Length: 625
Image: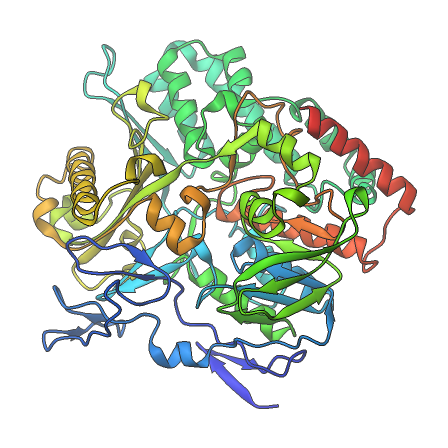
């Protein structure tokens, strides 16, 4: 069979379909002019014209084109889009059809193809990755979402990105981040210049930093973060698979009984309740709220303690490691691996309808119909779309199961984001960016933590990976929670003006927090995205990123997992446990693939009556949580 090179790796033609699935070198594109652009998946600027670079362009040391002020060109390049696989066999029944090629869906696909399953991934865009992608402009590589990557460690069991890639024989070159994040928090009587907390790679140094700021809370600081560490230590000895599979759970209990028993009290616990058992200082509690909001977009009171234990401790174990060349390298490598192992990825494939047979409790998902009329059938369907898209869009209200209606009473759509991608001259940053923390959290008013544009997350990955920016330049990516309501009903001029005003306000905050008063004048490229952008180009209803609890949750008990009450239909990604984040959706993908393969008879299982009884019990408590 003919080999085709993808990047530096040979890619064998798909062994199931006979078609080749090309993966572009970087998965997402942007926009219009440098003055105010929006992220766009299709690689075409809104006026739909193909634009050629001007004569001022230079070739950087990394081979990227850099030309300040040049017109945006089509991305991905036309030769890549012409090579995309857009076909798959319709006369076979796949073991799994996966709707969406985000990291959650691709991780599930990787797990399944590595175990011999026939898998079809349907991705409606030109490239894989979704919100875990990146795009290129004028020699810059911009991550669409967060650049803070957990899961690339080489020890324990929580290195989920490493595990996801290894399943299909892939690894990525990563750059260790010397610190995790620096918090710039509100001023007060005790902190007239604002509370500044740097989180490094050492847990002991972090404790010492907090105790210097809050000496009266020394005992409480250690007690709370030690509880987080205890949870993480228990998780880190378990083989993390599907929490909905009783044989696996029984096996883990047999192998690690103490770890499992230690986790039980935290299954229904929320982080805020645990923190308040140990800590009284309102500013320190505010810091813990901010820590939770960064990864869950809700404060500690609404964040399951299991999730906090994982995230707030893994940074000191597996640490933060950035994939060299951009976060989009992750889905690109996963997609290549899936195809090399015999799976098929079809691009420009928009699923319009999930096909079912039967009614009520006997309803079973059997296939999908695309917008172009093609029909694919599968023994199982895995939706990497949001639960709203899955059940309201592709299933329809009339077929929505009761459990999903109850889910909507417990959870609401998470906020979207206002995002600002900047290409700046390095001389605008202190010491040219050398020694500057890569990630920053900016919050000037505790009361505005959950407000639109209240907390700003900033990443500058070019500080540790120069390949993502031209020489003498840096990437500055700032994003903040936002909602669709503020961006509706505007004409083009109003929309543009509101984007510029919001961007200007954030840039002013960056100048103050980073100590970079000349940042505004050093901007050579600016891309702006709003909730409308995320809805249009990432296919997210109202731009949302997963569900958040609408009331205080019972820890993880009420969280949606992978199985649904429609037979053969599963969900994966940020609409399922453990929630948002690239490492989190990789965990969702690993768990989902495990549960699906058990249901398909590809992995050992308990007798069906026992398995069904366990599933019914879980659903009973979940519906009433």
